[in-house]
Length: 167
Image (tube, rainbow, N blue to C red; front, side, top):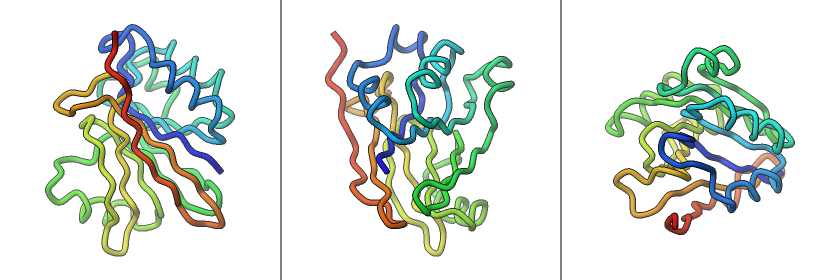
């Protein structure tokens, strides 16, 4: 099962449109996970129209219309693994401990908010993945997203993709 992990798309505030490379990945993925900050409903509509399966949450920049359509925390079983999705996990310091305590029943937690890619595994808790942002690199050198594969109950081929600078 091929996964696309993304977050913090911020369209149209940080970018007028999503990168073509990300749009291609949406259509190639068996499941798409979006960790919030869509900003507009048109972006959610686009993901829903193109994704085979979409698991998403709202973020702090998402208004009432998006909050009415999306949960704050989402959970899904994907290929035998228990996934959770949340927008914000708090400061980097102490993140592993907090997430292990809050989500002890998960294998993988996908989060966003910081726009900073993250990949760690908690002691006795979930693997934590932040795909960064495909539209707003903030303090990072590149805009990013992640792909991964779930095979036989294992998360493999977790890959951070760097997007070329916008023209």
